[in-house]
Length: 282
Image (cartoon, rainbow, N blue to C red; front, side, top):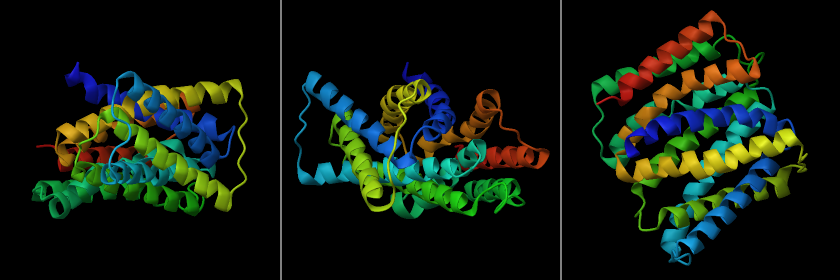
């Protein structure tokens, strides 16, 4: 079962980009995320009680996982949701944040003391070249500048959160750590709401179905698998599975959201996927 975890993760993580659109069509993105992670935190709290895990932990362990949640669920998902809410195409948002593996490999040397080869640097170059082809002629028109900035912030957040998660002491049960991370994400979005936006959620059938997908399949499923993989593998090996996500997300966006890609976009996707693959293979 463990051997198929990466493939399950790819499908679930890619599908999250698709269910983001119906959620933000029926809510403010930050209100939706605050609601989502309140449910997720409560769910992991109940599971931790059921499995008789120690919930009250020392401050060090709590703040380690809490900060990880601020990065993963706050800056990363907040950036993705906000960018899509202002017009960033779903497939291109997925492409940008999926450059995480090449950045993780580039930074894992100085931060985690993992050796980075010249082959991996070639992959980094190809990855960003492909992204440039997709973005080059569309920034400011098809791709909103604010959306691009938000997505780049999301890319940095998921990269540093992966590296941070690998550096953690990992002394917490997975359910307790996930609960604390969800609390961090929920608090982050509540602060954004209080400071900057007027929250609203339309609890339509579409919203409920999409939110249920993200709570149960993504937050409880995909994110738990990701935390397990990070804990049990090197950071560079873990993120290697991400090279399959751009194509999977693009196919799902075409299938479910009727998003189109032109020839240059497809070439960019192809080059980026090759770059990520080269940068992250053994």
